[in-house]
Image 1 (cartoon, rainbow, N blue to C red):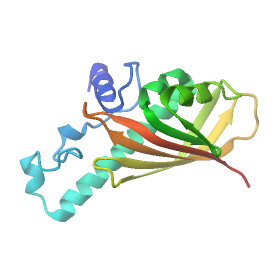
Image 2: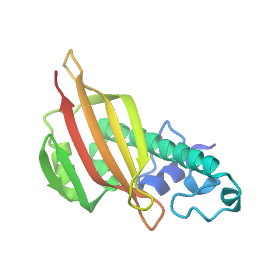
Image 3: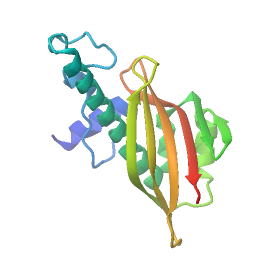
Length: 180
C-alpha cells in the first residue's frame, strides 16, 4: 500500500493530520464486516455466527492496535496534535484528576513536567463496548523519561466512539502510573 493510502486511512479512522506513520490501518469498510453497519455486506451474512464473531473480534483488535500505535506516536512526538482525537464531551482522568473537554485535556498533557518521553507498549486489550460501534482499549507499558534511568510502569484505558463521518474519537481516557 502506498504512503498516501495509509495517511488517508488514518485520517478517516482517527481524524488526524497526514504525517508519515509506521502502521497500516485496516479500514473496517474494506472487509466483510463493518462495526457501524454489520448487515451492509452480503459476505458477512453468509458467514457462520462463529466466523462473524471471530472476524469482528479481529477487527476490534486491529483498530485498537492502530489507535494505540498512533496515539503514543503523537504523544511522544507531537503532543498538541492529540487534540484531534478528543471532542468537547471527552473526559480524561489523569492520576485521579478529572479533566473534561478537548482544550482542558490538551492543556494538561502539554503542561506535564516533561517534554521528551518514549512509551513502550507491553499489552493491548480491546473489546466492543455497549455503545454501538464503540471500542474499549486497555494498554499497559512503560514510560521512559529523558534523563531518567528507570522507566515508569503505566496503565491507560480508552473508550473510542465512532463518529458519523466514519472515524473514532476518545470519549473516555483514564491514565495511572503503576507503583510497586
